[in-house]
Length: 295
Image (cartoon, rainbow, N blue to C red; front, top):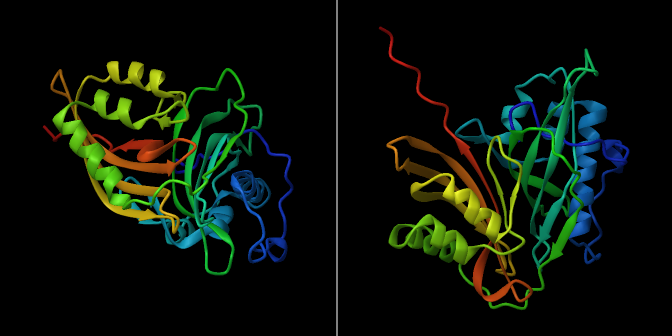
């Protein structure tokens, strides 16, 4: 999410006291829809107790936020005051590994002013990688988001449980292959080969870009060369879900240059493609432009 924005339309869930947020029992069934429900608890906590307190409660000890460089999310939020907004959100896409240890949840957020609830609301999308802790609790491992105009329609939840039926493969294979293909061919080719109808890209100022065709259209609007460099990667025990945090450089054809960070989630599953890693979701966050030199 962004610094003070990360939510969506109010969830119907009611925030539970800390003592009632309990881990799932060992071996209990847990699916992608349940991960979306965990996201709902997180959002409800934000509405009831404030954004800062919710982030501290639901972030893992080693969580990461982009501000714009990576920082420890829990430590960063502890040092903040609760902002004067009501921040709410809900998941519209959730994917869970077959081993039940990693997942992603992304969807719309909405922020409203506490002082003036009638003031125009802020809107955008959040992007959260969740990890099951040794205690059994689910915590946010990596979190970021974008802002955009109010969406015309309300997206419904799409929840996907990976089957674990595809052969496990090193998580680094996905990133390395994608980066190499981008250089050897083009970003358009790399995304076309990596994406599916389920793939979601998040870009600041734009509504979610969903599916191979929409991604191809988007790439036509940003011609130029792309370079990717992962700095942190991880994968599920089942070897079917991988995430990467890294840096990117985009050199536009008109000479403009943009640098920043990306977060990417890959899946490898018989229900998607049993032989290759496929891109599930991605978010970019550009670095702010350098200040102009003083005259």
